[in-house]
Image (cartoon, rainbow, N blue to C red; front, side, top):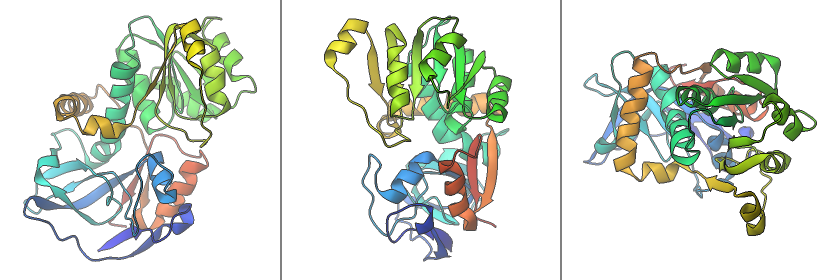
Length: 315
């Protein structure tokens, strides 16, 4: 089968499109013929081996797929790796049936980042009606879903995005106001967008100076939810600063949710049900041929993309 395989860690240039052996399923596994594989920013970390989970070589990246079993059933699955391929072996217990009204693009595009968005808004930020939440990378796969989920929860939503085209997309999904994420004084720009007030919650994934600016304007009893470090610039905080401001900093890594089937199962049902009922829109940015995975990573890293990026193994 065709797959993307990594033999040495690095940037997009290490993603090689090649022929590899078909998967050999164990007794507890079945093979999914992959129709779509999701591309996530975490995949760029995995290719460099600077993500939270250590990687081993050779590596076929890819953490989510949608496709078809040999019996014709449509399924999706969340993986540790292996998704950038024409086929993948998955434990039967991890198969997620795709309901009527949800296509392969929506299943692969909405599952991982939809679960992330739901957990960020509800479990981590614990947003309440009338509160203000700022969503970084609001035009991206997680961001576009988080905007909608936060609005459904009754929040005032401020979306951060780097271009007017992206901000227009975010406003169309329900954001009350948008801010240029590359503003010279990001904190001041956000406060101005929030009528001079501090912010109740942030969904933060960039790291670096943006983290400092956002912590400065976080309201008392506010929640800073960290789900990424795209800049690879980490920050440290003093416990005294948290006490003085009654501020919370909450980290989120999807792996811990995936280890909790008691939480995961109901969330998957709610998410796919909302997509099937057109209550949530999965914004697909571009579907790349599997052979062009390098270009997908280059575009993602350069922030040239909107919505969810997918790979199509058939082309």
